Image (cartoon, rainbow, N blue to C red; front, top):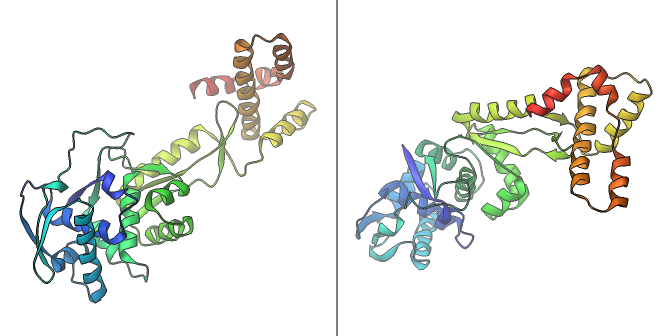
Length: 308
């Protein structure tokens, strides 16, 4: 079973972890409803996201506080307490307009598996479960629903979830260890077709969808020149100079050098065509690197470059 969550609500920075957990629980129990009066109790909400009743009383208090916060922030309406921990409210305000457009490639809703919610809330760890649930929901917000994976930096995930980067790294490691999510990380850099060093961000997916992230990472590794650290521009330039003097390099190394030199030349040529200043243009022409060696010995590199 799947739960649809409003992306804007999950990413609201003014909501506490308790409010996010209460929202997820209400969406789990009510779905899209046009009922202006819905009955629910706090134990029901806790059960809906845990698949069991909490053994710690603080979870009852925190879930109740989350519901009250949703009411204070006008996310639910007309909240009335019938008796202790039992309420009625207008939950029609939780309906999601699936036709509305989002500001980026993501739809206005986040899709989360009920089984995954239960797994997150029952992880054998001392970490705060409401905090884990909030981060999991934020992480799912960056995953493309159709592609089944998403790419994002730790810095951006920390911003979305209102958590420290160290916390994000800890939660990522926990989710991977418990097979809740899969992370396809390439601890390397690449040279793009402009000859620039570019970082590759992590590829995230639900664990059951890990093949999608694996395939995306494999495509990058197959098509791009991967590097082990950032200071490669100078390194490749030096190898190019040594290569012209007779130093022998392996085929893949020569291809890396070619991508850097040819990519830089292409970028410079574009600037030359756009520059009207003769002095500057002459200076850029003089900076172009000789590609005779590649044309004579590795003409196939040009075809590979053009395809990418």
